[in-house]
Amino acid sequence: MPLREYDCPRCGTFEVLQKHHDEPLEHHEPCGSKVERKISLSSFSLKGGGWYSDGYASAGSGSSTGGCAGGACALPGD
Image 1 (spheres, rainbow, N blue to C red):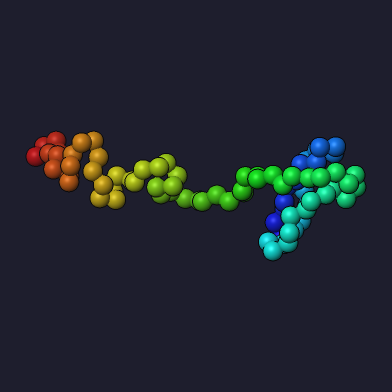
Image 2: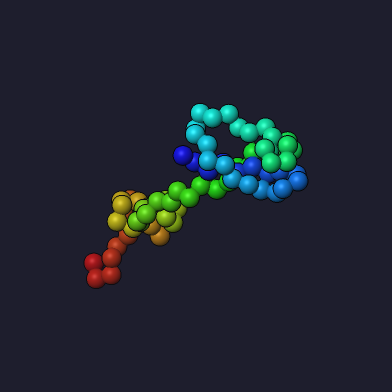
């Protein structure tokens, strides 16, 4: 069950365990104030290497690098 974050004008920010299909809260039970649901960052993160870790393909993935279109650059000693 995910934690949902709400902002109460009287009490500040608080969290509530809610199911995905539960309706958002409208009032904070302890004080009765109208609340606003906050959008918080996810704790989801991808592990390992890949395009998502640095935004670019790795050198061995067949992409062109350093202006050598299609791998047409000569290597030293050729």
